[in-house]
Length: 372
Image (cartoon, rainbow, N blue to C red; front, side, top):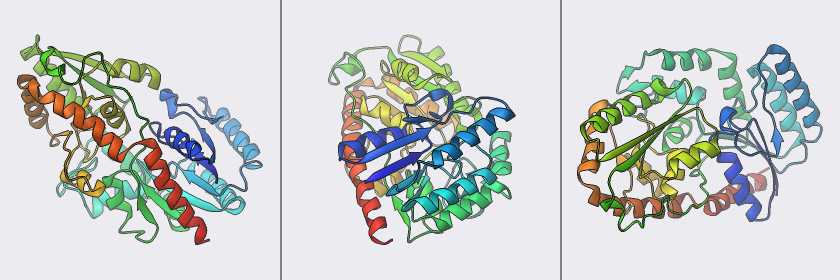
């Protein structure tokens, strides 16, 4: 198949492309590298600051549209698949639709259905937008509501979701927001991860005997409060003060992916996304290296994968007390670490290996093409 992957979130499309190419497909990735993270891509769609640069990017995209034709599959990372206004993207989508075969929308992150469902239907006990029946009213959450509800972005998302041939959800959370609205075209496929070696020179068997435990937390620019990493960081800093000999803490913010990965690689534990049911790309990558994830590991995460044995994720509830307690228990009982590290690697091998995931995409794409 000839496949165009448009846009990038946390290395999803770049990693998927590697898997699909390994299966013999011709794949082009066009993106802005996910801003400062600077993930690899075949065609650079980075937008420089300033209004005129928006026009420059738009002209570049229209030139590229002359070549973006006759693809078997075009997959969009998000309704905002290029850093342009929603009104511009609607016209671009329609051209892509006319010139290519199957159109696929990725449900991998922030969009109208994620915001609206979490506020209105509330399928999750907690999320980026609700705690039970209570709606989050902090400014980062309100900003996303203003951005996606009652706007051109909402209309674009609704149009693409209704018009496209298939919708791929990458996490349990996104699946429960899309599937009720589009049951016939929604397909859950786990995020792809390229296999890694264990993160440090210690063997997994003896890792627990080495103190201090190295804890890592990555902060997204301007999104710490929204993702709950501010609370996770506070709990970790307080534990660092209480157990200075048992714990090292590394915090990184707004660095390119290569730098982020180098800093993460020597860690034992990663703290990530307080309000998530499931690990996203960065903790999944860490787990492939034998790094223990403290974050989202709710029962629903294992159920959607059909995983009945492994429980590598230290699940926390969306509050300071839960993060503090679970991390303290690990500091006090480091003998738990070898099995958690081993299970983390096995979990990625079973469910997120990029070749296995690429095969699931291949099957999904083939089913869409057969129905055209």
